[in-house]
Amino acid sequence: MISESASSAAVVLSGWGIAPEAVAPLFPAGTRVLAPTRENVARLAGAPRVVGYSFGALLLLDAAARGEFSCADVVLFAPFLAFPREAGAGGRVSATQVKFLRRWLKKDAPAALADFYARAGLSFPPPATGDAPPYRIEDLDAGLEILATAKLDAVPAAARSWEIVLGEADALLDAPAVAATFAENPVRLVPAGTHDLRTLL
Image (cartoon, rainbow, N blue to C red):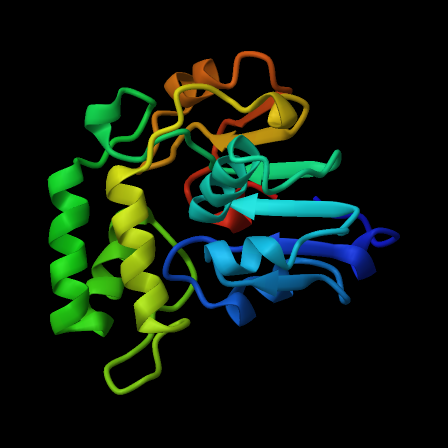
């Protein structure tokens, strides 16, 4: 967890479909929480400590592989090198399910998000019908496209010192299988941890 002393300069890249303001109370005052977009990864330059959660973690790993992000002090919660089950990187959800969610998001975003929250076991309240989405709908859609297709063949060299935290009861990820893809990283498995960030901190 981010320490009080580092909180003022720490930045968190949140998970897909989760409003930054919902995540912010989990961290000390002064922690900046950003929506998980490639544009926001660029805003992390110079931050002494960065946290990536789920899809936000994938974006950090992808940026490190491209040489577009570097930071010595990074913690990744519920990370993965590829999300779909077919990629063989520890994901439990099929690419077809991700594509279906993407189509559903365009037709009825609140219902699609509520279903995702329920399947993932998230304790954050999903947006209700009539509420604004957690962040821009275009970014939600782009995130699902990345989740369905992105695959890193290995942990980038610049990311092999990053701390990895996984929940053994994660509904979306097979924690031991994901841990095996981060063989050189310091990995912590949380026995009762789920995909919900609260259970991993």
